[in-house]
Length: 305
Image (cartoon, rainbow, N blue to C red; front, side, top):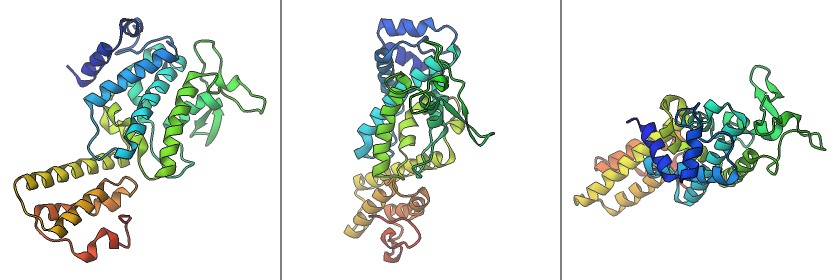
């Protein structure tokens, strides 16, 4: 059984009979979600069930999600799942209400340290709230072709008194769920602009995709690879302790500081990568880290604060 099949089966098994039957009625999609739109409460239940299954199937790499952001990331995953379920069922064809399209939609989200940056995922959802679609060919915004299935209204045609277009959170559940997600995303961004919150949120959704190469951008792959290396280093360090390998006090302090630095998502990947080999040599006991090359004294890289 393929991974996506087992995940979908586990997802269905967590649902009550009503929600399972709603999924089953969508016969035009493979591994379907409900169609037509099943309402705010049901979408919230579906989102919580899906995220619960995904987090169990694809637990976070240790160190990828800092402890202080763990609750935020979990809540954001549920809200983004709910927003995606609502968007697919309200604005996309029936056949697109499925796990594969959910993965494609989530994969469009990217992190940007510039506060004005908007990923393709954000721009997709903003078509509902602004009535406008960004066109790379035109180099600007054009009217969105989105039409809400429940009442055949276009966000672009919905004009407010101030001249703005699109639906508000009170008028559309897609906007409501997505704005709640953006509140969390913005709060984390204001605290740590470099931290790749979007990667942490989307990580378990990779299990829904049949192509990892397309799911992650290059920077996200590098972040995941680094987190994997750090986990391996931590495991090796722990094993050495268990086998009574002796480290002097300076070694312990330096290794602990370096491992903490390598996990610090607020520091650039390149800066952290530059200390992987030195951390590995210290853990293996090959050399001591010279004071002159301490990350606290590096002039050209981010520093341990």
